[in-house]
Structure formats: structure tokens, C-alpha cells
Length: 185
Image 1 (cartoon, rainbow, N blue to C red):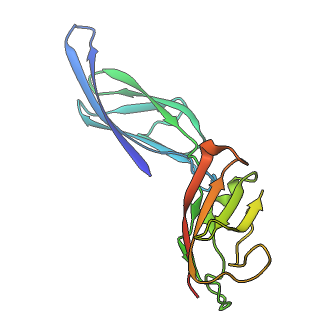
Image 2: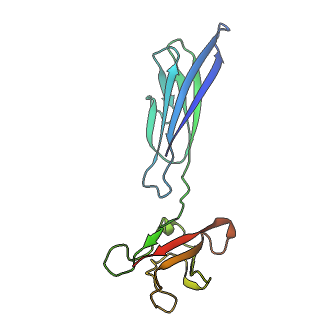
Image 3: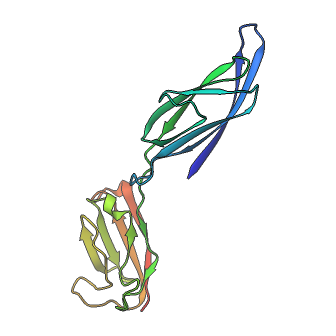
């Protein structure tokens, strides 16, 4: 997700005349799995062209790409010599587990297991699935292995909604996900 921030800065020029520099910052943080690095872009909206950009990376354009998480700054100078420094922090996005809402364990080769996106980033997680009576039908601690709709004894569970509780870190209740998953055959 790109973030757009608008800033208006009032600066004192050497002749005690106010110079206004108005700019937008657009940034993209590093994805949680690092498949995409960050980007930062600064666009001057209204002042006196031409504009000169000097990033702490040495770049001289209004945008820089392929950034790791960290702090970046750019000195913007307008045509009258007014300047300002913009600081931008590129963050590492937090990975969130995203359980699928339903699956169809009918052995047709499509959607036969319950997928939980980003579960691989939580090697110490605990996964529990309960039926409507509160009985535990699936349990896994550590790296998630796909649930195929069978209970703890290996018997296929009936079509129904099941309720899950997932702890990111063992039994740490501060990192809990709750919801339901539906089995349709």
C-alpha cells in the first residue's frame, strides 16, 4: 500500500521574506516477506522551479527505489535557492496471517486443504480448530501444515463451519487470531 503525505513548510529566506515550499511524499514500505523493497518519492507542488533534489543516498531525482527499511532524507532546493530537508522512514511491513474462509476437501485436486497465507513467517505458532460443540478437531504447533479436513483421529469431519484460534507465538494471547472456516464438499 502506498502512503501519500502532504506537507507545507514555511521557511525564512536570508532577506527575511517568507518562502513557502509545499510538497507531497509518496512511500512504499518493504513487504513483510521482502519480495518487494521500498520506494520514496517527493513532489514539490507549488514554489519556484526548477527543483534540485539531493538524497542521502546520492541520488538526484525526486524518487528513489529498491530501498531497505531505514531512514532516508532529501534536500530540496527551488529556483530561488530556498531549501528544506524531508525525512522519510521506510518500514518493514508486518506480516499478518490470512486464513482462507472456506475449503472443499473432496479430493478433486482443487482447494482440498485449508490455506493460511503468510503462516510460514510464524514458525512458533499454534493452530487450533474446534467444531460447533467446542471439541478440538485440528491442532498443530510450530510450522503450519495444511489441514485436510480430518479430525485428530484422521476421520473426515462433516460439512460445517469450524472455529479457529491461532497464536502467532505459542500461547501468547497478545498475538491471537480468531475466526471461522467453512468446509464444503
